[in-house]
Length: 194
View (tube, rainbow, N blue to C red):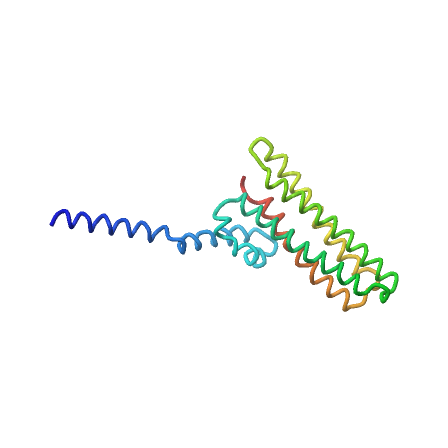
């Protein structure tokens, strides 16, 4: 009887231990970590929405959080750049010269932004203790430059009124989201402890 009781007690303890470390408990912990981290960003709701699907990869790791934020931003920037280029090709020959010049400038600044985000993500992937402080400063500089490029693209559509409202809105909708994601990534890089 004593042996049966002992086996029952051990199995109950084992089941309790499994329940307290189940993936569903972990996901809530990881999502809370992301939510808390995103509260320090400029656009917390967008931050959480873009990062929470990766909670199991991020866990409670600041490095994974920053890397994922940069990765998601880079992907969105590629999509926006593609949208601007596609729109430019569709409008070739139909667009007034000044409108075409503004779109071309936007394409150039978006390409610059993409390059800076790629450099940032590459540096983030290769961080180690011996170079972390210097590399984080480089990453901050590149992400800041990417954000400036994104704003420069949008500024071109605000100045002079040379671009039709329809074109401006299509491009602006794409670029604004990237600028917000970039701003959030920069906040996470600046605010999280190493």
